[in-house]
Figure 1 (spheres, rainbow, N blue to C red):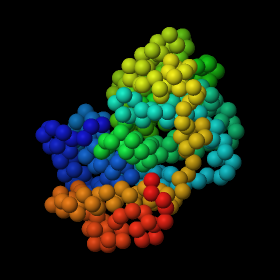
Figure 2 (cartoon, rainbow, N blue to C red):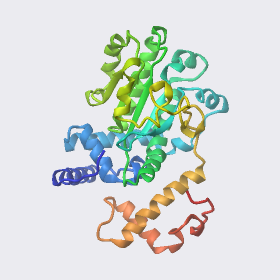
Figure 3 (cartoon, helix red, strand yellow):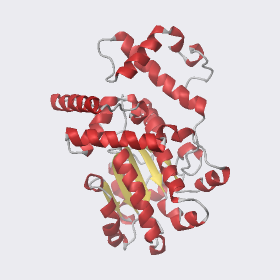
Length: 334
């Protein structure tokens, strides 16, 4: 989602900030990709067709949901070893590069997992949904920052997704699948709006359009408009949006690997992030904001709590600088 750039956008963002202040809602930093509040508010405004009141209500609901689900701690939350091991096999996927517009590109081999079999193995629906939430938190708190640094942008807050539906069978599409699909779709749409730039459904079977009529009811119109359906003979269309060096050979690219660089190395599984490293990521973001605040204190962040935090950092030079210069900081620089 682009940063506010027009007077109309700035006015809408300001009105939304005022409405959130009236409601007593503070947007947590971990809810803002790359730590940018303006871009985050723009996403919620667009999701609610630029209606300030509806966007404020949506943000309020998301903040409450994040508190109830402890979403901020999802990256550092572990389940028992057996459950974690089973989830390692869940939906082989990974980030394989970037689109031509700079969005992180994720490839999922959707049909290599049978949700019913996974649930029969002892995984609960809540654990499966938590896995998806943890993957989204990895995207929001880690992957977007890495993408912004890689392409030299201030904010990146949308990804593109390729879902490979090779070998999809009707046996996989039972009532359990539809129930879980609807629950995960609702979580994405209600709490992570406008974080997808495009979705490519590739190698779709001939019967899929009939299935899509059932699936599409759980997907908002604004999301459906971003989905492109490609049969095996149509894969050349991917190269209109993605450089062929990022695409695996079986999708018409020149990457010899099946799935490129997988998320954290293992089939799309997002393991808990080391707490010290997670704190260090947040520390570096705070350092950058503190430097900006020091250079222009007349334009502080929107929330009083964040302003107070930055003043504290500014007043303590041991909290600013390289990791080796920070109090208690022993992690190597990224």
